[in-house]
Each structure stands twice: as C-alpha cells, then as structure tokens.
Image 1 (tube, rainbow, N blue to C red):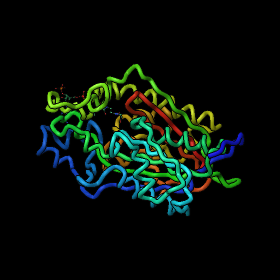
Image 2 (image 1 turned 90 degrees about the vertical axis):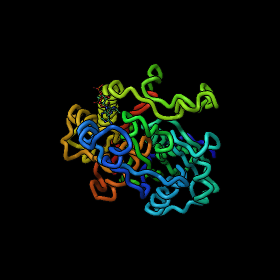
Image 3 (image 1 turned 120 degrees about the vertical axis):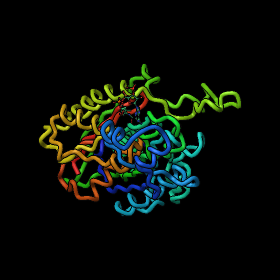
Length: 333
Ligand code: UT7
C-alpha cells in the first residue's frame, strides 16, 4: 500500500453486528453462583447475555458481522484493502484473528491485523483506519470489535461472570462523499500505570499456564470493579467532551451518545456529566452484558438500523477499558 500526503475526509459506509443464539439470563446465573437477578440488575443493568457455542470462535462472529456491514456499504470483500479486528479474546495468540476473517471473507487484497485495547479497541481501530484512509494508505477499511469473553470468564467467580457476554460488530470506512457524513474527531488515551485493575493475568509470556498453576484459573478475567468504575466515569466524560469540542459541537447538537456498555450506572454518570439528555443515549447492555471491544460496535449497528440517527445527525461514541484505555469519536452521519 502506498502513502500519499493527502488528508481526505472519511465516513462510515456500513455497519453490521452478530450475537450468538444462546441466551444466558440472570436467573440461569442464580443456579451457577451465589447471586440474584436483583443484585445484577440494580448494580449493572444487565438482564441477560449471549454465549457463543463451543465451536463458534471470535472470527466466526466477526465474519457474520462483517458480511452485514459490507452488504450495507455495497462493497465486495475482494475490494477490501484493510481489516482491523479489535479483540482481547482472539481465536489463537497468533496468527491474528483478522487473518482468519480475511480468509473466510475472501478479502485477499486486504492487509489484516489485530489490535488489543480491550473495551476501547473498536474506537482505537476506527481512529487508525480513519487516519490510514485519510492519509492515502488505503481506500477502504473493515473495522471490527469481536469477543468470545465466555471462554475467558471464571464461571465460579460471581464478581465477574455475571458481567460479560459474546458478540461482534463491524463497520466499513471509506472516503467521504462531498457534503456527506464524516468522522469529525477521534480521541484515544492510555494509562499503563494501572494494568492491575483489569486483566487476564495468565496465558501470556509473563505467566504461561503450566500443570502446576492450571487450577488457579489465571487465564480468566480479574477486575477491581470499584476502582475501574471511578476511572471509567472521568475518562469517558473527558474523552467525549474533547471530541465534542474539537468538532465544534455543543452537547445539544448530539443526536445520540453511544457509550461502552459495561454498567448502566457508569453510563448514567457519564451522561449526566456530559449534559446529554437520557433519551439521547443508546443502551443495549440489558440484552448483551459487557462485550468489551464489541460493545460500541454492536451498539452502533443496532442504533443505526433502528433509525436512531440518520444523514446529517451527529453522534458520539465513547469507551473505556483495561489498560487502562479510553477512546471516543464524533461523527456526522
Ligand atoms: O468494560 C471495562 C470496564 N469495566 C467496567 O467499567 C466495570 C466497572 N465496575 C463495575 O461495573 C462495578 O464495580 C461492578 C458491577 C463490577 C460491581 O459493583 P459494585 O457496586 O462496585 O460492587 P462491589 O464490587 O463493591 O461489591 C459489593 C458487594 C460485595 O459484597 P460485600 O463485600 O459488600 O459483602 C460483593 O461481594 O456485592 C458482592 N457481589 C455480589 N453479590 C451478588 C459481587 N458480585 C456479586 C454478585 N452477586 N454477582
């Protein structure tokens, strides 16, 4: 792919999403661990989540979401030039999940790689793809948030297992039409001093899984929930405000806020601080729980297909996750 110095405006040409068929409700979880529908609902807003089949991998969900996004964008997979999969639950540590997606789609021309930025990953991918198209590196891109978190959850730990779910969301980016929609501003940030707040400690080179430690479930998600909660609220507020300001917008210009879907109380706190009315905030976490990198991507597709915004409307996406990482994007549709 060749570089040019041009700075082209970039738009989202299509979105797609996929969630697995199997529904795991709060009542189902009451049988598995010491919890209650009442605790999960009041503390998080989650009522149910989707769980992928044993032989349904992250790439399979990503491909299903991709096909819908490509169809809406009117783009043949063979014309794709870039695929970025944001995931913390790849099919394999290597090769990248994006390579499986490229093959399954028949997108032979596309350069394909993964990024790992946890729940902020889809918006990191959006910024990266937007910059690459804008700078002339490629003409189009397929970006994905795709997760099979159920494979990395300790199903005996009630403090985490009630929170997460599986799914995938996709968007196709390409050069904007004159006078049409456009990604107006993006923001990404990282604070690597707090890696211990939310992580999967084992299974990497720092702590390989061995016969000796296998029973400690080190390759499952661990979180200091209360600290993550506080950081999520301030970082998401600041990040969203930054893209709103840099786009020359005011909160009242935002037709829809699409926040990361981790906890309804976090969403309410962020919404209040950005001063966007509640009826302009998209929430689907009651159906899917926290699907990490997939959450904003699925929410973007669902809200788009539900007609919650249309051409000319301004939307803002904002996310926060392990790393710590945060990101946002302001878009004129
Ligand atoms: O996606 C990346 C970003 N992730 C997030 O943003 C998640 C941020 N954190 C949160 O959403 C919340 O902190 C949680 C939902 C994880 C937890 O809510 P909390 O209000 O912070 O609860 P807590 O951790 O302070 O726990 C309160 C109590 C504890 O009992 P004690 O110590 O007060 O007796 C827990 O043991 O609730 C207990 N508890 C549960 N009880 C019933 C924890 N999990 C459960 C459960 N069912 N599933």
